[in-house]
Structure formats: structure tokens, C-alpha cells
Image 1 (tube, rainbow, N blue to C red):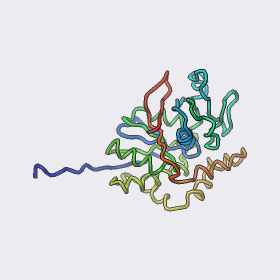
Image 2: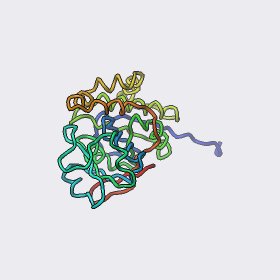
Image 3: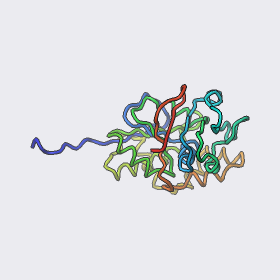
Image 4: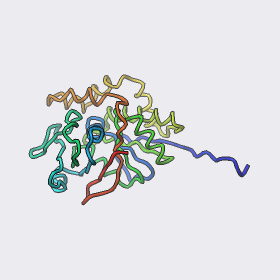
Length: 238
């Protein structure tokens, strides 16, 4: 019996809002739009990303030649090069990006105590599940939410990633994880368009971004924390 392999219990949990502190593997989800855009930046050839907690911190972190990206109220802040849209990803090839958003990058900072920190979306759902499974036996899917309220879009995305984790031998733990899995049985675009985040984008004329955010498994770029820079969290392609 001594030579038999002992299979570890592999579990994933879902936090509807960041609460921390986190251990193990944490996957931050802000599908509309920060984590979708972050993955698209790396897929498009960005060198790496520096995620700031606030717009002021992002401005202070930016070095010459780096791209400053972000949003406030869904729109590009004054003095920023780009907004927070996956449609703009082609503009960052070969450059470093400093980024700050209302919900997503704040959630990243709330989860920074995790041993491994990843960014997940629908676009990289399978890839982020596979990467998380390689990095640990316990995974927490951390939903950014919208300004302190649970986001339907993020919870749905957690369910989609959770289903892929289950295919890799993980089990869901907790009622929120099971709720997310039930949500994931629905059409991605229909769910995302019903969310408050999507409605807010529609109001400022950026509804097309929601269609991109609803694409599932279209690339394998997984933003993985590689370090820190003056208070910003640095992510490279995993």
C-alpha cells in the first residue's frame, strides 16, 4: 500500500466579490472588460502589463514609451493613450502597458496575497483553467463585481472556467460555485448582455465590446503575475 499514489482533493471556490486574503491560486475575473482586455493585450503582443490600483497610481507608474490604458465610467480617462477595450489590443504590440480600471485592477490588488495570481475571461477560459490546474490544488475564482455589487457577468464567467476545472479533476466547493456552474449552462452573450456592466457600456456607446467579451476560448494568452513594480502588479503571458 505504501507505493500507492494518494490523490489530493482538488477544489475550486467562487467569490462573488473580492474578500481576501488569498492563498493558493487565485483567478481574478472582470469579464466586462478589464481581464478580457488584459488577455487581449498579451495575445496581441504586449511585452507585459503593470496593473495599478488607481488612475493616479497608473499615471505615476508609467515610464517613457509605455502605453497608458484604463477607464473611468467606461470611457478613456483624460491623458490616457487607450481605454479599456479589447478592440484596441492591436495597438500595444511590442510595448508595455500600464493599466487601471474601476473594478478589475482593484480586484487584482485585493487578491495579490495569492501564491499564484492569474487573470481569467471567457476568451481564455480553457487556457486559464489549465494553467491554474498546473499551479495548485486549490483555486479561487475571484469575481471583481461592479462597484461593490456582485456582477452577473463575472459569476457566469467563473462558472464557465469552473466547468473546465471540473474536466481537469476539480470539484466545486460552496453554494456560490454551484450557482456559477448553473449559470454557465446558458448562452454567453445573452447572459453578458443582461448584466449591469453591459448596460452601462451600451449607455456610453461601447456595446460592441460586450460581443467580444462573450467570445469563449478564442485564445490561450493567460496573464500570470510575474512580480511587482513600485506598487503595481506585473503580469506576463503564461
